[in-house]
Length: 533
Image (cartoon, helix red, strand yellow):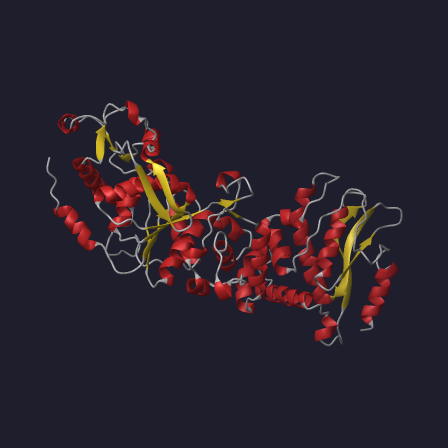
């Protein structure tokens, strides 16, 4: 059968040339995990650094894994991160459509072209859909590989179900080049005859990517190193069509630790999870950029980069082939740095959702609380007391218990928590108990406005941590293990303390004010001294 080449000539004529073109091609199968975000960021930076074109393409050929609403998540995440695309499903472009399920006819035509040229064949063997997607097939036992073109065509015309498989050479080797991994050569006999077109007429991931990348003029392909094993088959497809091979940039995986990749199934955070925990988008992007890439030259020692700065300095030569370990503590450092640099208005906007989780009264001004939080953080950072920056005349000192009780044996963490919070809000903690009672009540002493904020922060932190202290003799829980909500308090608004709640019965460090009843002991002395200010 002779194929009319006019269609293919018209498709070739549409391909843009002359500038760098990259694509981010996610599958709408769930939330944007950290590895996806890094791929999107790198493809964006490569294009913008070269004044090229950044394309968004939706790869939805695996219909069984699609998640409703996932495409909207992709759009929203890209917009929040400032990764604006020049072409895509929502903005159009010269090589539309940009959704793979809308390009079904295109893949069928190019698969038939490969059959005509002898680089692919019809396979009528019964295989499960999962086997077709994986390309899992023993070509040595495949009776369809050696069918004559005439017989195969007759079976197709008779309506017999089939797939189209790539015909991999039995002999020789295939070599491809990657920016990070260099030249890699594989023996063709180790490659399987992967499925190109499935029984439902949709392409497999590998085939659709090759066809789309060529027809969209993609010059740089950024993807995970797990696709290195598929790269030789990609190259053979490019050679079969007579197309130029793009620049490959395979990125090593983002790891949870030395031995385990990050996985949403194992509870590792997505972009949405990190946002919900109080991490800022700018901080996330900055940190993700450095997961597997390092700046060179005069920027080699710099860590904090805006998106515009990343565009300026990004170079694919800085991408490492070594796996990158996702360190939540390092991300916390970036987040705290960005929080400290925010304007009051921006800080108030970012902090309001978390303030509203703690302050249920709608009459309370969230912006005002945000301003107090930011002011206290600056004071703590510079080791300032209120008397250092404002006159103290007519200031009222408040000493009051806050309704939280504890015992020496069962809840020493409560005391330590009060000490931690008070230290950062210019107050002093104390414990009040009735004569003969083993139960104490937590209280604070400080200037009225300091006290109010200290009380608010303590009660909020207590509500976050208390459910995790069910064991009356806990081994100790780190602040970093607390919920995302309380993380915002100690890792963002406060200088980052590294603390562990002590074991029951152990010494509680840093109390420094004595227990005393109500205003007794050193607590009363502190009050008297404060009133004289």
